[in-house]
Length: 84
Image (cartoon, rainbow, N blue to C red; front, side, top):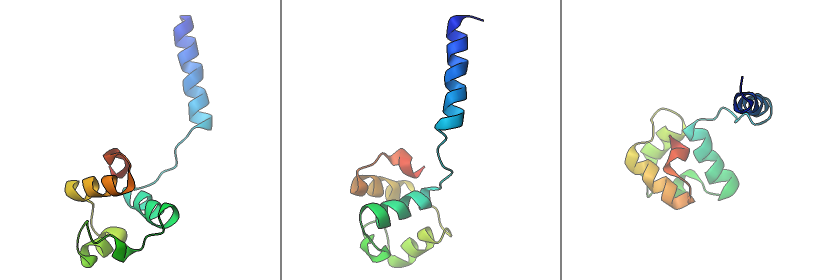
């Protein structure tokens, strides 16, 4: 093995042990941003859709669509990939 292969394997092992990202869904992320970061409630998200639709999204009955993801990413100042 070359030195680059060895170092690459060591980095991968370290990241696997120490830098695992938590298993979260787009809805978990949305709820975190709403409640923990911005102090928002469901009725504060009227710009993404109606209250019925927002309720279904937050309860996991409906997925976010592209338009809603773009709106949320602008509102919270995060990448669209955050919700994908």
